[in-house]
Image (cartoon, rainbow, N blue to C red; front, side):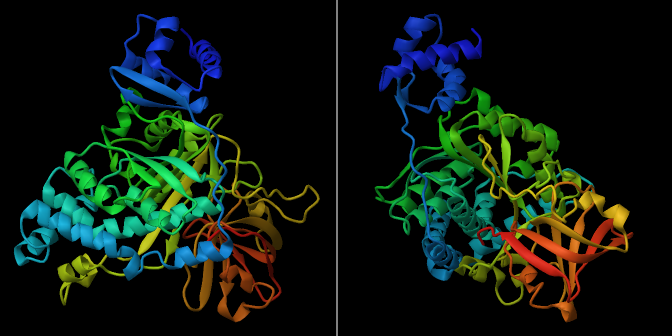
Length: 500
C-alpha cells in the first residue's frame, strides 16, 4: 500500500479517536502485518500527524500529541542563564557524578594514581587516533577507560557547548514549553544532562528525553549518569536509551513526533562516509520530526569537520528539510559549502578537578580541555529562518558574487557575520557571507580605522545580519579570498542581531 494511501487511512482512523491500539488499526486495515515492523514503518506518518506511541510488542497504544506554545525567554533572562554556563557551580554535579562513575567502574578512587595514569593514556590514544595523518581515523568507545577518558576530557566541554546551543534554540523560538527530544549518538548522555541542567533554571519548561547509542560501554555510563543527574525532577522524563546505530535508524523502534533532534559530535566519526552519504541519514532521521520540529547538528570547529558539516547540510536540505541557521542566503542562492569554514566560539569553561589532576604541574596543554568552539546547523521541516532579510530591488547593496567586477572600487554589501574576530590586535577580520560567492569574503577593519560609524562590526554576535557601506574591494591571491577593507568613512549597520 502506498505511503500516501496509508497516511490518509491513518489520518481518518485517528481523527475520531484520542487514542487507539495499533492492533485495532492493523486488524481493520492490514491484518497480515506484525505489530512491531508495522509500527516502525508508520513512524514517519505518525510524526507528520503528531502521533506518539507507548507499549511493547504485545500491543502499542497510539495517542495524539497536542501542539504546545513555544518557550520564551527575555533577553535579560537568557543572558543571565548563558553567563552561568561552564562555571564551577554549573559543572559541579557533572563533576561529582563522573568521579562516582570512575569509582563504580574501577573500584578505586577517581584520583588514585594508577587510575589517573590509565586515563591519561586513554586520552592520548584517542587524540592519536583522531589526528592521525594519512590514514582513516578510527574512533571507538568499546573499552571502559575509553569512556572514562571521554568523560574526563570531552564531556565537560560538550555539556556546556550544548547548554549554549539549547538556549540559542529557545531564543530562536524553536523549543516548545513541553518538548519531545531525541539525542542521536548520545554517548554517555551529555545532551540529556545539558538539557536537564537548563531545565532546573527554567521552571516553565518540561521535556521527554529519548536517546540512541550504539556503544554498550557508553550505554552503561548513560544509565549511571542520566538517572542520577535528573534524580526526582518531575518536569524531566528520561526514557531508556535505544541501542542501535543511526545508520540503521529506519529499522529501529524510535519515538515519533520529535520536537528537537540533536546530533552532536557524531557525523564526523563516520569517517568512511562522504558528506553526501551522511546527508542521507539526516534525511531519514528527519522523518521522525513533528511538523514544527527541528534538528541541530554540531561538530568540532576544525577545518575538515566544519566544511564537511556545511556540505552535508546542503546535500540534506531540500523540499522537506530547510536550513534555519546560522546560514542566511539573503539572495536566495546556495553557498559554496566546500569553502565555508565557519564556527562560533563561547567563553572557556572552568576546569574540573579531574582535568586539573590529570594535568598536574606540567601537562595543562594535554589534559586541560576548556575551549568551546563548534560548527553547527539547524534544520527545520517548515520554512522558518533565523533572519528574514532580503535587500530591496532598488537597494544600493550588491551580491558578494559581483565583487570580481568591482576590484579596487568601493561597494555596499549585506550579509551574515559568519565568524568571530579572526584577526590580531592591529587588524580585525571577520568572515561574511550572503550565499552567492564561490570564494570566501572577509571584512577587514584596521584598528586605526575604527570609528563610530563602523565599530558595531566588533560587537555583533555570530550569524547576525549587517550592511556594510563604502568598503574597498581587494583580492588575496594567496588565499583565493575577497577582502572588503573598511576605513573611517565606512559604515556598518546591524540589521538583525542573533542571540549570543
